[in-house]
Amino acid sequence: MNAVNDLFWPIHQAEVSSPEWTEGLLARVSKVLSREPRLIRLPDSPLVFVGDTHGDWEATKSLLRKYWDSPTTFVFLGDYVDRGPNQVENINLLFELKCQTPERLILLRGNHETRSINERYGFYSEVKERVGGLTEAYASSFRELPLAAVSKHQGIFAVHGGIAEDLDYIEEINDLPREEEPENTVTFQLLWNDPKEKIQGFKQNCRGGGSRLFGRDVTEKFLEENHLNLIVRAHEVFEQGYQEFFGGLVISLFSCRHYRRPIEGKVLHIDGDGGQQLVSV
Ligand SMILES: [Mn+2]
Image (cartoon, rainbow, N blue to C red; front, side, top):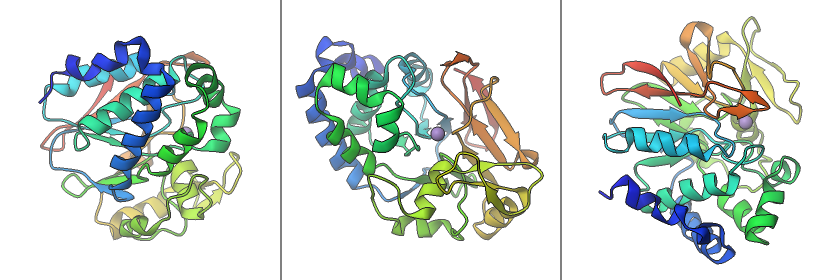
């Protein structure tokens, strides 16, 4: 296995943000991602789940360094770009590592890995300024990102937003189309939905666009029918970096440390015996 410093070497070079290098990287990663199913089956190794990073590549690097030398599989829950200080570095670093070690690093899609959102929240301005006209190439690579992951061994379902109204069994995720703009309602809701205490079923979400809030009853039903016991998701800012819902059936993570205000970013480490530990970034 490569030492982590070797893996980081290209990202320290000025040319990492050159249009030529980035263009090649995006072509390589698209090919790697296109071979992955929409629903990733996680290995029985220890796992570390990472919430939104939004351009906080210092957080990303520090996490990779912390767990790289242990046999840990990294599951990033999406939202790598927009808003933060080093968006191109953050996504390019993760994409380079994905190409080099595809099994160790699972990169799920967040709602920010979408053209219409990148046009509004800063990523495309950074891309145009730093790496030229590669917005189309980023959009094509984002289309290939898997939508969810499952650890049958640990009973964990991982997704950026949450469960979706018309999704009964997780295997159905493998039939969802690869779309640059998530128009399929199940795909959209996997990327956009939020858990909410004290509601029943699915309700309208103020995020709009067809996104929904989901309550405890539908969460319990989903977990039971899929023989799972925990949903790990991201997508919402919490100052302490995480929030539990429904008595611990859902854990929400936020792993970047500046998001309009300082945040204590957290990740969730699951050891081989299922022990859960929330760790500061
Ligand atoms: Mn999000």
